[in-house]
Length: 335
Figure 1 (tube, rainbow, N blue to C red):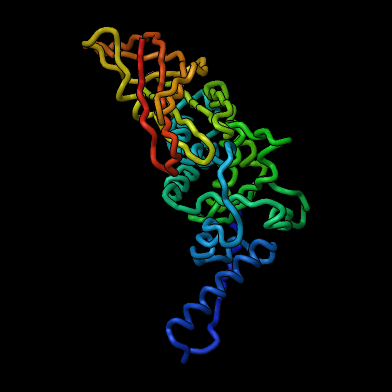
Figure 2: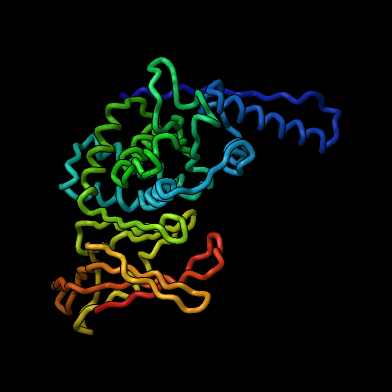
């Protein structure tokens, strides 16, 4: 039997019921801000926060900044692909999970799916904004991440652990293992050792199929990242990021892929050997080019699966104005 995390009830009382609506709202806002300050000071347990406005205030930048560097972007992208990654691990014997580990991973998968649309599912803090938040008794160990013991809570990431001498200190398998650990706590499990082992196994399973390349572009890091699956009927997860902007290209790859024989149907693929190609300029548009090798799995009329090797080029048309979260045009070219 697993021991569940502690739950407590937090009650907040207004100063007077005869105040106007506006005054009560102002008092409400003050209470939210007080909760944020107590939380960051390490004096309010995460599980005692029941009002999502606390998390909204944190990601809104009223208390801290939540800028997106390359590692922060990796966290968001790995979280978004978690359901597919975990489902793949659950059905493949190569993941080498015990029956109990599979049951736990299924619980974590359900939590990840429930949390996926939460705007505050990831919150990044550092020692300046929250000096005691990751330094918790009794171990007095500064943690890389924290969360609570129920779903629909944020995972707090220690930004001080993301970079070393300005360079990324966490790769995608490490991020995957860390998110599995924290979402495992959200199932109610307290054991760090069980979750460390599970996260390590899943991270290692995907490590050989993960590729990335990065470069500086207009002073900001630009990165391409690929996560391959071992099943021939699955397509890789593919995304690129530039500064705070990130964009998934997996669907575009699936739509553009083709087989040499027009009677064969592409059902999956794997990407490898990512590399940068020479950019080109056209007035206010710069074309960023990436090349890769693409193995396409093609199914014929008799359901026999063949594999074909193709050269892939992806062109991203970057306008002179940075357009926030809007996706840039992407074109796929096969040879």
